[in-house]
Structures are given as C-alpha cells and as structure tokens.
Amino acid sequence: MAALDIIVSVAAIAVLLVLRGVMLARSRGTVLCSIRIGNRAWRSGVARYAGGELHWIPFFGLRLRPRHAIARRGLTVSTRRPLSGEEGPAGYWTVDCGGVSLAMSEDALTGFLAWVESAPPSAYLDAA
Image 1 (spheres, rainbow, N blue to C red):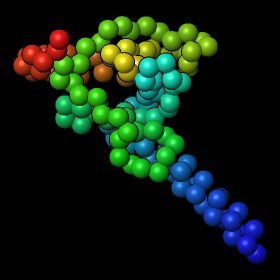
Image 2 (cartoon, one colour; image 1 turned 90 degrees about the horizontal axis):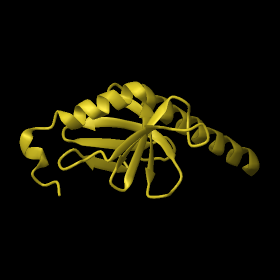
Image 3 (tube, one colour; image 1 turned 180 degrees about the horizontal axis):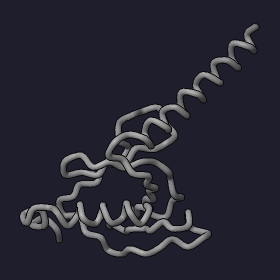
Image 4 (cartoon, helix red, strand yellow; image 1 turned 180 degrees about the vertical axis):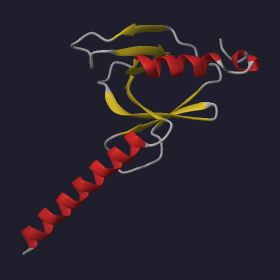
C-alpha cells in the first residue's frame, strides 16, 4: 500500500510539472528561450518582458517566479549568431550579453533586439 502511495505521489508531481511547463509556454507574452551563464550547459525555459527587465523562468522547477532578471538599462548585446547543429536547436540564434547567453528563435530574437533598442535615451548612461 505504501509503494502505491509513493507511485501515485510521484505521478501527481510529474503531471503538475508538465502542466506548469505547458502553462508557461502558452502564457501570453512569453517566448521559448534557453539561457547559458558562463560556460555552463544550456537550460530551457521561457522569457517574458516585464517593464525594463527580461524575466527568465526555467521549465523544470517548482517556482513560478523568474530565476533570472536581465535589466534593459545598460544592457549591451556583444554578439549574435546562429546556433550550430550540435550546440542547440536548428533555427535558433544566440545572443551574448556580458556573461549571459540567450538562445531563441529568429522571431523572438527580432523582438528581443527591438526591446533592447527601444529603451529610453537615458537608459544607456550607466553602460560602461
């Protein structure tokens, strides 16, 4: 009986995690986006724009709050390039912003670059 309870609990948690991922992916104003900090591996999640920040939420996890918040103020895009086949999904582009790299579709990249460029003129005063 205890083994059955454990199996049912694990299955319920798995279903809730899958539903959380589907809800995040289908939320209005979110885009599929992977993140890499430094030389770590890519982590999948979604990104959404909230005011002057880009919030990144991982697919796998219990929290609904963003794990990373990237401020638009002072943000500079150093490089952008298409991902190679062994690096990530085909058709995705990577954008390097300091020590953080984001990987997203070409459409999402266009939106991201427009968001960065639409910052008010005073937003770049802090950039060094």
